[in-house]
Length: 105
Image 1 (cartoon, helix red, strand yellow):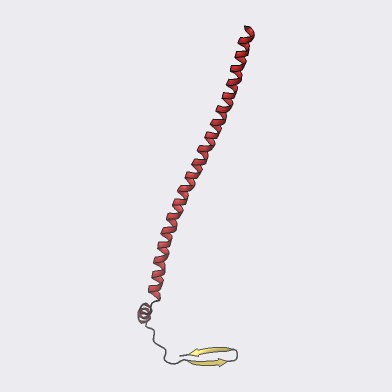
Image 2 (tube, one colour):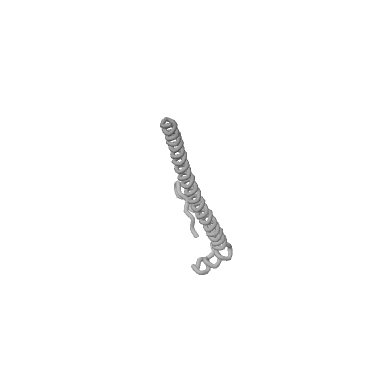
């Protein structure tokens, strides 16, 4: 009878050890899973922020290109020429001296 009780206690002890090993493994795996999900969620938020930045920068770039086109238009250049008091060149005379060429108005 004593041997049977001792055998039962050993079986329970062995079963309890395996339960602890499995429980420990589940805790470790669960922790790794939560850690991985946290990293994925953080990267998702960062990617969303970067996409939003890309969108706002592309809008800003488009506005800048429109401003450049407006400032390079003939009308804009003509207005700035008048504001600066520049005159139109009728004829250009070139003077050549040695290796250099100069233009006279």
